[in-house]
Length: 128
Length: 53
Image (cartoon, rainbow over the protein chains, first blue to last red):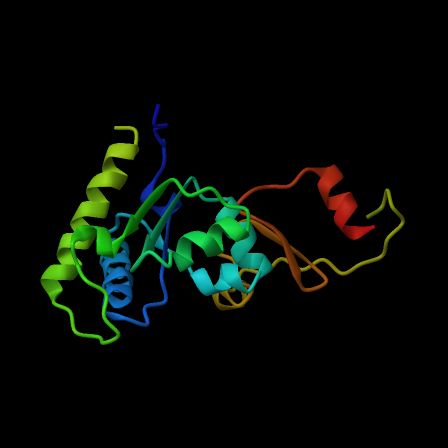
């Protein structure tokens, strides 16, 4: 059974792929959009990879960890898991039907679609 | 510190820029000798003793 989270947006931590491709950039922009719209709070994935104590300890204080990757290489997911964190909600942009390419061409509609889909999943996980 | 006989300087940091320079995103946080030990919760006395002795 999926556990519900009694959490505020500030306790929902968004980690995203660093974005060296179109789908990575979509992932990053979608996370920025969610943070700007107050769905959650964007955290620094590189800080987790770099074992920055402040980032690690702050992540432990979060109530919901959301990871967003561009592609199946799954760097965000693996970085978080390597640091010992359990991911509550996860999405790869390529699952949304977008094809990975080593370029940075994408549309605002790609970002909107990804952000909306993830926002819906986060909302379902939160206790009303 | 009194229990452990340790003499140390304790500083309460309120400057948000100084806090974020440690990578701390949740307060309260405790830094011992430059390393963040905890963020977003109040640690127990026993935990603090472990970190400073």
